[in-house]
Length: 93
Image 1 (cartoon, rainbow, N blue to C red):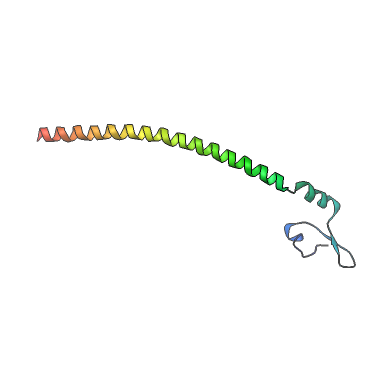
Image 2: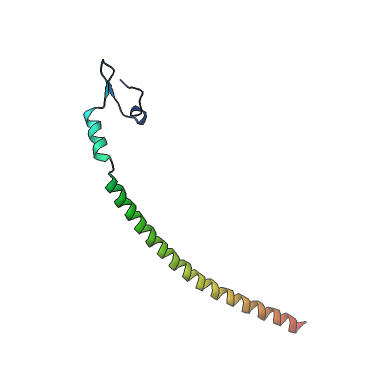
């Protein structure tokens, strides 16, 4: 029988005794206990994620620096080209 409580709200079945007490089946209790994260697990995961974020940040900064140099070269080339076109138009007219 399904009981209305927070545990059954997440899809777990509960047994209800004649006295009104509810109990989870043993296999569900085992699954809950074996899948719970400890504080140590969470701290380890947090440290791993922070390390990965730092590596990604460093990689992104390197790529941005390389793009900045490439963009600067293209801007200089475009400025020189525009100047030459403008000088040619002035000389022609």
